[in-house]
Length: 349
Image (cartoon, rainbow, N blue to C red):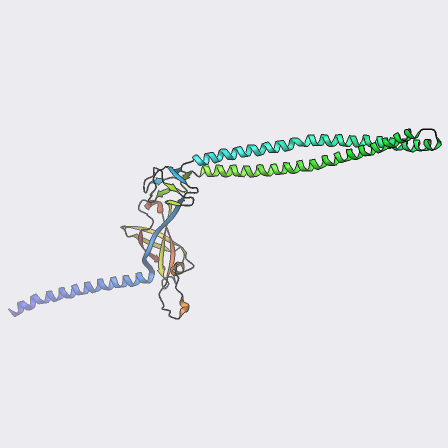
């Protein structure tokens, strides 16, 4: 009986030893694998997917005339997203066009004065030439009649007539010179008026371009292709210039920002391979590549960065943002969404 119990207990002991050995080997294998993995990889779950989120702004103030977008609707770059009532801007455009026409009419009027002023100046110059000849002749007559009067050849009345003619010729010459000078002054004024009219035209053209630009702003177009975010706009709603209406999340490029502890980045460098697992899709393993490192820790970008100069410094392990490029992102584009949490492992050895 005892021999039978000994015979049955021996295989049981062997089996237990074998199972224990297998378990030990498995545990050692997993422990070795974990240690080897820990030495070869740096990992973190403090990471998320990023994408370009472009704000859609209204550059003008007005009432929304047309808006039919749905939340999270796909749009293409250049699509009209919102239409603002353009009645006031059309009137401003017509006013600017009318002001420009008036300014051009003023320029034409100013330029038309130049030929008239030039003609008056030519007439005045011809008058000066004629009056100079007349004055020269009158001067000779006075000189001659003065000699004849002394000799008694002519009467005093005749001599006085010669003197009167000379004085009249002097006054006529002075008048012609004054007219010529006045015509020259008018020419300068006319040219100044032309320059003012040209400057006014330039200002009116600028106002017209501004009116056209404001009119174009009544149609708010998509700045990029992607999906619109949550919208709260309704037709008839009043929007302010510069107000952000909603955002368009561009789906043409995604990347990951992973925040590694400062003790993990010693052996990390750009170009290293990365394993990516999205929390929402744990069975989907994605490959990536380290593309860059931030030049400052995340704490430096906070609104209230820590001040260590106060004397009550407590050392806290900082985190450094690391950007990771997603390899073949187009193959997994359907599951990529900005803000999703991910786990990343960087192969450092």
